[in-house]
Image (cartoon, rainbow, N blue to C red; front, top):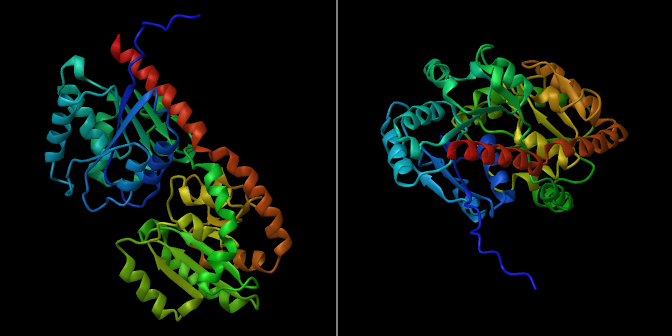
Length: 384
């Protein structure tokens, strides 16, 4: 009989995820995805966020075993959250602070320098957006403090390439992702969702999941839909899931274009993935992107993609294989792509198979294991 080991179990690695808000955005959803598959025996995760009304994903995070702490820095120039973060780290030390927003990353880097060495965490940063998309103040704060990180990640090669060359030498690309098997399980909801929406199987549904922000370019998406509806006899229906600051503007343009029920604006939906299962084509008209979570979800569901060649999209989609890629700000080309695939169900079926195969690249478990090894390495170096 073997004697029970008297050695204590190794301490869990303590990680604080730091982000501006926990609203229904891509970077925020990636945290939820990671939380759901993280190794709870080896790692103790906590999330901290600044904006109190961006709390949509607090519940899902906590359900996955990751408590969320509100630092309450709801105004860009209200820096009291920095002192709250310092107090939290002094009272509850962690091994790694992993920041997911550039401005909060800059604050965390400075806070870390003020802590006693015994309580000073290692710093990791993930860049989710193209560097020029951040405002000047954010870029400046990020640039001046960037070298203080211990590890840095970009979500796509395109995002990495926009970081100034002298700063990106240590930045590596890591595809984040989705809980692949859970997303794929939503495929069985196709008929149910279409029935709820009152859409028959003869209608080609072209859908998107994107918040109402400038970079998502809803105006050109709406214009492309208007053109496509006028150009083909195939019955089309457009569906959009999302919310955001430009909601009133998008609804007004929708009214002006006379799209009516042919383009349905469904607002925010907790079951966005379930909605995608009803689509025949997934689309994004974006001007700028990192690597959209909704795009990964569409691929996992076997939905062909029509999207613009921005950000990490061309790295995720091969034009002509999993879908069609067009230049940004060209509603005429978007419309032509919609029509080209709407009339060809055989080609859509082939692209569906290719999309499903491609989605294997975006299994969050692969990215999470990689991140956890990095956390463990940073924690070990910190404890020496």
